[in-house]
Length: 283
Image 1 (cartoon, helix red, strand yellow):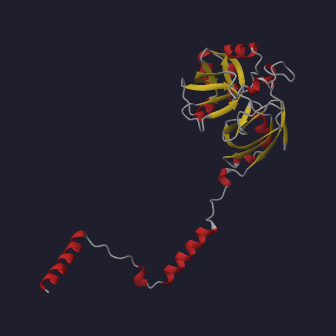
Image 2 (cartoon, helix red, strand yellow):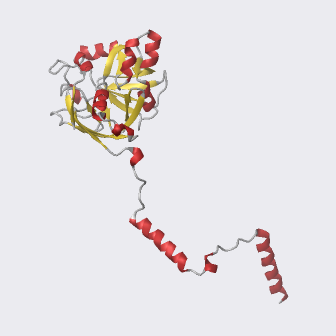
Image 3 (cartoon, rainbow, N blue to C red):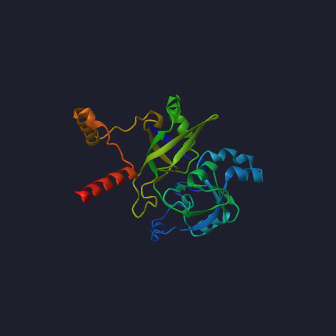
């Protein structure tokens, strides 16, 4: 099923044909980020309570981040794109990486705000440092999800429910988990695969095939069988054959040979050995 996704929030940052579209020259700077910094990370919900921002309550549904205004000023002044970023937990470089985009540029200097569930995936707590940097990754063409629960697929309009959720996402990263809410019910979906549109000449993919941009694109959504419906892995042919041979050999053995040998205590073994030695000496 193809679903057209057009993220309205992105209109303020990168309209099609704008001067902030990524240029091949800026994207070829020896594969180094155009901007990067270590920022103290806080959840959007905690900052909303602190600053009385009730309008931020709905902003925790996606995976977008809030950065300082100085970041936007720095990038715009140099004509660099400001729509794609990566955030890394330096303590978990293997798994603590997420590709995303900006929700707003109003964070305090040296701070970065994230949805609390995204912080949990990255493995960071309130106030801990994360490395944030600009990135470039291609437009999405497809994505494959695996629900944790089969109840998600029982929802009659689960495609539309996922689509409405993805409208709050700047990007999808393979190997991460998307949280979909339906009223008070929360469903977790693993992102198994992402497919990307072909890159233009001179452009590169900083995610190495693991992330796709969801703005201004049509995406085909697919689902793997839910985790709670998957059967346990079957024994391989070699392992099954070995088990069968062992069972057959045990059946053919006489019953008295099938009994495990009696273990002797150390003292018992030493006594027998001394007795044998004395007998030999007398002889």
